[in-house]
Length: 231
Image (cartoon, rainbow, N blue to C red; front, side, top):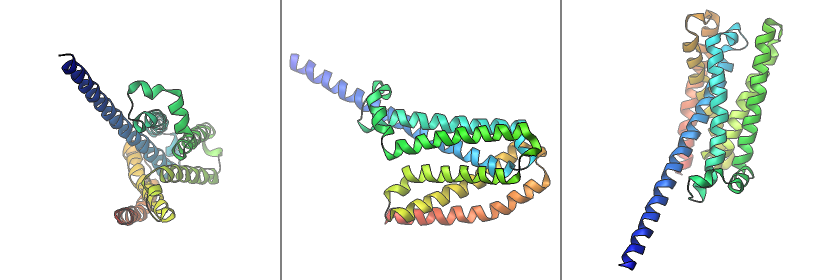
């Protein structure tokens, strides 16, 4: 009887561990998705709304703030969940300082830190743009959009599937091009849909021109990356 009891306790502990690990893995996947959507929203606003006055529209501003919050929240959650998932631990390991420290010391951790820092810079820049209205030069927004794109491409490509495929430089470049094109297309379209009738005709026309480039780039880069990963 004692042996049966011990076996039952062991089985329950194993099942509990599997269930816990599975839920942590699911939470990690959700965190990555939230962070990805946040980056798409932020780049979409920069591509579609700046340097026009649409950047100051309240609805576009809410989308921008949601994107920033989602990017930071996703990055923070990934940093906390990754270590627990890697060691197949439980929920208590999510708040283990040593696991968090190990994660932040990896390439993934460095990319997450850079991503959060860049979000802070971009949020401050956009807030300054709204306060100064038309005083800010157009070059400022070209630079802001470039920074957002480079950060999105660099941090996602450096820690995503592109970093594990061979040849790595080509795979990372394809991954970056794919995400940038998707963000410009989907994020920009979302921005214009959120703005609705407040989106000026020239802004819509300019986005249509950019989408005409972004869509084929997204399709071709995605197909090429898939081909490389499948070998």
